[in-house]
Length: 180
Figure 1 (cartoon, rainbow, N blue to C red):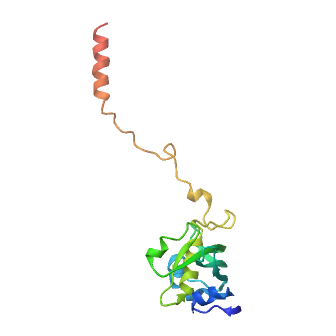
Figure 2 (figure 1 turned 45 degrees about the vertical axis):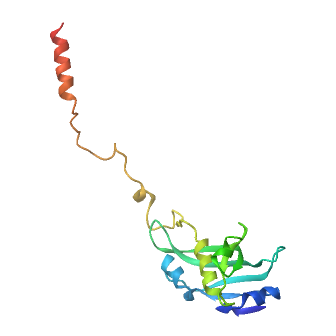
Figure 3 (figure 1 turned 120 degrees about the horizontal axis):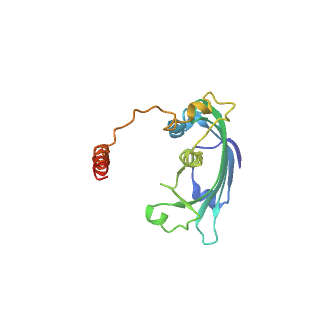
């Protein structure tokens, strides 16, 4: 089923029984936790969700999402366009106990009252797909590489610290001269 906007809630067990495919988009301004992480976003996230069951009869959702986010550069903190893409495999469960029984290849997704909040699932996957650090190319960044380099000890003028053993050295030197 191709939709322009994905519904916010679905009945995933019914979709899995019919092996439905949902494809559409989600407006980024509907994802408040993503905005908390990386700032307000505009545009859409394109999502493909395939509902079904694996060979053991576990109901699952195979998904793919892609979006272009405006993420802050870690050097200058100015936003920059960054493509984000993710493939994921979710196992539908109704409790945390059942989640522990899923194989490692499946991430659990909690289905309550036969309903699944798709916006929350998509937002979770987007947040998990965020790159750890984002930088402009040096030529495009407002902060130069020289501004980011910390100075070494030889470049920083430090007053010479007095050696606490200088007195002992002087006594030793005096003692050695006296024995000659």
